[in-house]
Image 1 (cartoon, helix red, strand yellow):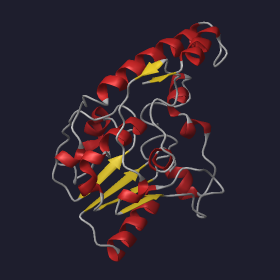
Image 2 (cartoon, one colour; image 1 turned 90 degrees about the horizontal axis):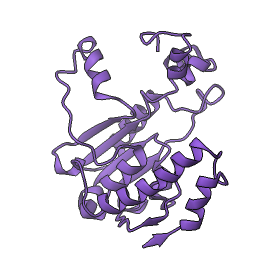
Image 3 (cartoon, rainbow, N blue to C red; image 1 turned 45 degrees about the vertical axis):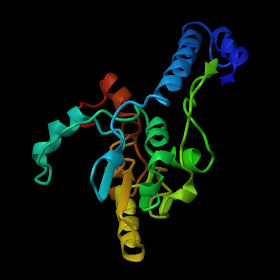
Image 4 (cartoon, rainbow, N blue to C red; image 1 turned 90 degrees about the vertical axis):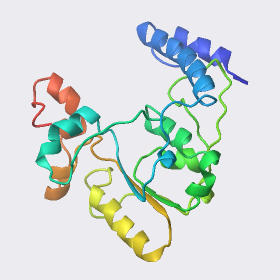
Length: 233
């Protein structure tokens, strides 16, 4: 059991964040997350990817099922859009609850190429959820593998072709690395974790070799301000 009650109480008084409503939200969020992770690390929810049969898994970060269904008719290779209950509602939670010691044998033959910023903190630095909230008490039972247990775990970094304009890694960099790994390594499974369609939306900026606009960086806020439409976003 881990306790951090004093720091948790300080979130209510505003020492950790701005006081008032914001402080109350973090205060209650800390209590909820402590209970939630205490229960769900011992009694997992959702379907783990290693319970399914696959050899190549493509992860599209922040890709919503309803949004994918809406654009599916535009792409011939999307036959249907199904859904399963995920092991986590955020990247960090999904990583920690997917790549566990229970599936260590399968993970040892998995190449995982990722642009998600939670990858290194999870598998190299040993960070566990929740990172946003101060939790008063938790009995969370994490059983996450480390980076050495993958066939190959690679957190892709910035590339000279776009680093003067933005930090987000374009999808073709991930694809190029996947082709290279496929030629050089012998493995059973490969996971390609693309950061897209997570914001910022870099497609046009990358193609035009320019800085991203504020609307591309924060599309939902731009929609709320009436600067762009949902179709443009």
